[in-house]
Every structure is written in C-alpha cells, then in structure tokens.
Amino acid sequence: MQRYSVFAVAREALRHHTGWDRAWRSPAPKAKYDVVIVGAGGHGLATAYWLGKKYGIRNVAVIEKGWLGGGNTGRNTTIIRSNYLQDPSAAIYEKARSLYETISQDINYNVMFSPRGVMMLAQTHHEVRGYKRTAQANALQGVQTEFIGPGRVKDLCPILNIDGPRYPVLGALWQARGGTARHDAVAWGYARACSAMGMDIVQQCEVTAVRQVGGRAIGVTTTKGDIDCDKLALVVAGHSGVLAEMAGFRLPIESVALQALVSEPIKPCMDVVVMANTVHGYMSQSDKGEMVIGGGTDGFNNYTQRGSFHHIEETVRALIETFPMISRLKMLRQWGGIVDVTGDRSPIIGTTPLGNCFINCGWGTGGFKAIPGSGWATADLIARGEPGPLAAAFTLDRFREGRFIDESVAAGVAH
Ligand code: FAD
Ligand code: PYC
Image 1 (cartoon, rainbow, N blue to C red):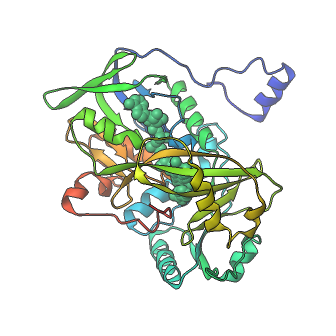
Image 2 (image 1 turned 180 degrees about the vertical axis):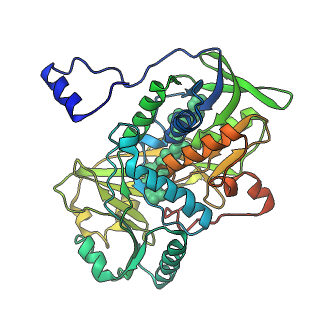
C-alpha cells in the first residue's frame, strides 16, 4: 500500500498528482473465500479489517450491492460518543470511541476525527435526573462524562438560547472527547487497508440467496455468480431482515428511514455537537460550514433511502426555540438512510440459527460511532466462532431470554 504522508503529498504536488495509486482494487469475485462478509458499510469493512489485522484471516471478500459506504455509513450525521447507560453498551461504544482517537494513524487514512465535545441538553427536570444518573454510571464504567450547568452550556455553545420559554436549558450531559469524523472516509480508509491486505471488496454485487447444506451456510448466490465460503457474516443494517429471510430465520428488527438535512455553509459559529432530545433534533457544523441537522425516524417501516419534505419543517420547528439562528438559514439538501431498529435499541452481534453464519445488525440510529469497536468484536466472533467479552451481551438469544439492554434514552433519537 502506498503510504500517505506529508512527503507523499509534496512529491505528488511536484509531479501534478500523476503518481497516486487507486485506493483499493475492484476485483471480480473468486469462487471461494474463508470468510464472506455481506455489506460494505463501516461495520462490514471494519470487521474485515480486524479479521486480517488481529487474526491473520485475509482470504476474505466483502460483497456490496451498491458502492462501499453508500448505505447508512455515508448518510449519517457522524456523531461519536460513548455516554450510554448500560455496562455492555458503555464497553463497546467506549472501545470504539477510543479506537477513533488513533484510527487515522492506524489505517494511514485521515478520517478527520474531531473530538470537539458532545452535549446532550437537559430541558426537563426528568432529563436532568436521567443525565445525572448516566454521568454516575459512566464514572463507574470508566467513560469520561459530566453533568454541566446551564452557564457552562452557554459558554461552550454561545448560539444556544438557554432561556427558552417552553424548554429552558437546565444543564447537559457533556462528553468532552466525543465529537465527529468524516463518515465516508471511515469506509474508504478501512476499504483501502483491507484491499492492501489482499482482501476483495466486490461492489455492484447483490447477494440474492444464502446457500446452505445440512443447516450450515456454504456460500451465497450473487448477481456476479455463486461464491462459496467457510464462514458467512451478514452486516447489512436496514436490509438485515431481508438477508435473514434468505438464510431462513427471523430477526426482531424493524427497518425505518432516518432523515437528516444540511443548511447552506455559514461562518464558523458552533464548535461542539449539540443533541436536544426533548424537542428532538441535533446539530453540529461541518468543516465546510454547513449546519448538519438531524431529525427523527419516519413513523412507518420502509426501505426508502430518501428525505421527505415534512421532516425539514418538523425538525427545524423543533429546534428553533433552542437555536433561534436557524430560522434565518436556507436549507441546502436532505436525505434518508434505512436503519435497523431493535426493541431495546441495542445491536445484535452473534451466531445465528444457521451454522457458520454470523450477524452484526441492529445499530439503528446510532451505529456510526460504534464502527471500529463493532468490527473488532465481530472479527473476534467470526474468528473464534463464539462471541467474546465485548459482544457476549448482544447475542440474538437475549430476545428469547428477556435479557434486554435498554438504551432507548441513550439512543437520543426519537423512534
Ligand atoms: P450500512 O452502512 O448501511 O452498510 C450496509 C451495506 O449493506 C449497505 O452498503 C448496503 O448496500 C449493503 N447491502 C444491503 N443488502 C445487500 C445485499 N443483498 N447484497 C449486498 N450488499 C447489501 N450513527 C451514529 O453513531 N451517529 C450519528 O450521528 C448517526 N446519525 C445518523 C443519521 C442518519 C440520517 C442515518 C440514516 C443514520 C445515522 N446513524 C448515526 C446510524 C449509522 O449511520 C448506522 O448505524 C451505521 O452507519 C450502520 O453501518 P452499517 O455498516 O451497519 O450499515
Ligand atoms: O447516536 O448519537 C447518535 C445519533 C445522533 C444522531 C443520530 N444518531
């Protein structure tokens, strides 16, 4: 793999950028791999990366029906934080957040991780109690968060109106090392690192059937032909129910569109991420100056990866008391992604009723932040055939056994 560095950029500048290699190869699929991963979003690619990096398993294909990172990974609002309530969630999200700290060096690709700080506003007394409880749980879990008062909130984000008549800001749960990263760079960086390890990332290749013999997965049928494998991983987010049906089992998951929008670019005015869960909306400013604004999920199940007009009005209306400045902004574009939501708002990582077939899904509205840690845990699962400590609580069995990991508040997005 050609190494990216300031010297490489300078060298290429002198020769008019004619010497850059392609970031990843685009091979035709081979007939057989040790591991086939369906879905080249962040989670599928990070899983492949850790399989190669940690376990030396490199005869791996990542099969993608569209273009890599073109699902939710390239459509999200990029918020990274680990301020969850339950211990298993804090462990996997904090592992992921800590990997984000060094990911650009680890994979030699600048994902623009920006630990600018994330605050979740408390705008009711109930939220104050809830976030104080989360801060205490986080302290026990080794996750650094604190509950801050309204004065500190205003200092950190002067454009906030903390004296709103309906929902004054009473404080916030603050995670100083939370932040954002460039979403598609995360997918591109992992793809480049996987390709350099000899793995095949096969785009424009849809899986249409899961082939099985005697209760074990033996491969997939795709629009580019049959591909055999020893182990199969389904990492397809909003299409998890579809792939599970091909594999012959059902998942406790609903697929629903989550929408976001950005404004025209403006001068820098906000250098933290703010989530306002009572009124419901969240906002940060991109490096280009656009205000990145997110809303809630659609109120009905669907597979439509697009925005709908009423969401602009609903989301902006919700935020306007807290951020009066957005009443003067022109909105530039909106979009949607299909997220996979479980009943307890926690992911599923584990074995499945089909032998040799593993699943990673259910990240719902909040899986971008989890990508490096989820890949780590899923690679461990595939390599060893059973979940390790990071994934053990997130297996499919929990729905049968009633071991829910309720993160409906920490999810921070209206469902
Ligand atoms: P995806 O990136 O969706 O990848 C799955 C891939 O599988 C897709 O590329 C798809 O094309 C492919 N696939 C599907 N079916 C097949 C098939 N039959 N054959 C081959 N390939 C197939 N999370 C956060 O942490 N912070 C946020 O701020 C945040 N904001 C969000 C805002 C929006 C608007 C949306 C939509 C999501 C947001 N999320 C956020 C959630 C986050 O984006 C997802 O949880 C995460 O990206 C899921 O990654 P993934 O790799 O599992 O799925
Ligand atoms: O999980 O932090 C999150 C999030 C913010 C917006 C969408 N998801």
